[in-house]
Length: 275
Image (cartoon, rainbow, N blue to C red; front, side):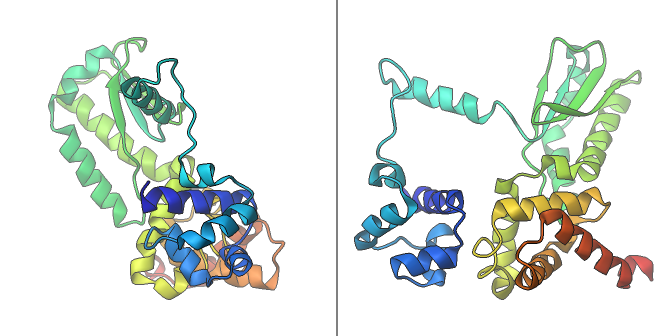
């Protein structure tokens, strides 16, 4: 068992109980900062605290430590089990590009490098682009391609140009779709990675707020609503700061209400795009 596995389990079970880091820390007799380090995989809890953790989270030690996993094949073949789990992890990819067999020649270009360049461009806009699953699909009609999020179609098109033209259109469409439909691609894992990265530059802003006071799921809902109003995720630091402040004033605010309030505040501020 690694600290990554244990930290993730503590965080998951705590959020399943709708507890903040501060609440759980108080109940097992540690500081919220110590608990935060466990969940961020920076340290491990002392073995003497495991019983308290299990009691408060209402889980068995086997579940918390990951030692009680059930067999999923009749012969307990580890290679087969790992293949099954890989298939399960990949059954709903957040971002998928599929195309007909007739478009396969278009991908003779260095699409991996082009997607990496695309990823770097969008990172400057605060967008963490998920892994792109690229594959041909025999059921599509000739020169058809689709961009999907969790198997939902975000964009589809039938092309009629040359190999080079088709490739350029597909890459441009992929980048535009990610930007325009980023709210459909976001999930809690992406939000956590964005927040963890923010901690490097804004430790005081993040460490005692997410997920201690604002869970990743709640922040995800805020971000989705915020972007659905045409706003950019580049405002993530401000969103976290204002969301925490708004919730201190009214803990019953919904993610949508918080997103609307922050969006309205931004409209009254002068940004570089308005100069």
